[in-house]
Amino acid sequence: MLLFLTFASEGGFDPLNMTGGGNLFWTWVIFLGSVPFMWKLVMGPITNALEERDSTAARAIGAAEKASAEAEKARADVEIALGEAQAGAAKLLQEARERAEVREHEIVQAAKQEASQMVENARKTIRAEQDKALSAIRNEVVELTFTAAGKVLERNVGNDDDRRMVTELIGGQGAAQN
Image 1 (cartoon, one colour):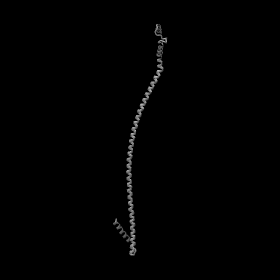
Image 2 (image 1 turned 90 degrees about the vertical axis):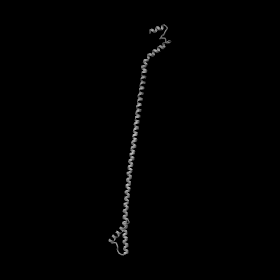
Image 3 (image 1 turned 180 degrees about the vertical axis):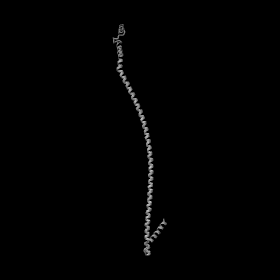
Image 4 (image 1 turned 120 degrees about the vertical axis):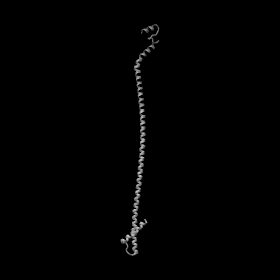
């Protein structure tokens, strides 16, 4: 301080004189004296908050990139599973069509066989009915023949021998016509 007082007495710089350079001097002294405290109390917490914010943002970006990669992988997995499901569905559909064609063929064959059986049964029934009708007609012809012969001969015709002979005669003609 003595240096200042001697410098001021010679007409130079007087730090106590606020009109000269003293005001600037004390402003710088106060500023430089308060910088460490401001750094510690103000700038330190702000810097720490900004660093923490940057760290949080970096973690969020990393998490978002990781989630995006996982979502892309999941989308690819879903597309693969969808492709496999579509291929499986196409295979099942083809197998179902093949089974349906086989079943259709079986049903058609069974229906043809049943129709053929029904036609054969109808033919047998028709033949049996024809045979019954022919037998009835033959019996009627035999009866008419005996009646006519009895009237023509004026005697009783129709004993067992006569009946056998007429039946053989009519049966022989029926066999010759068929």
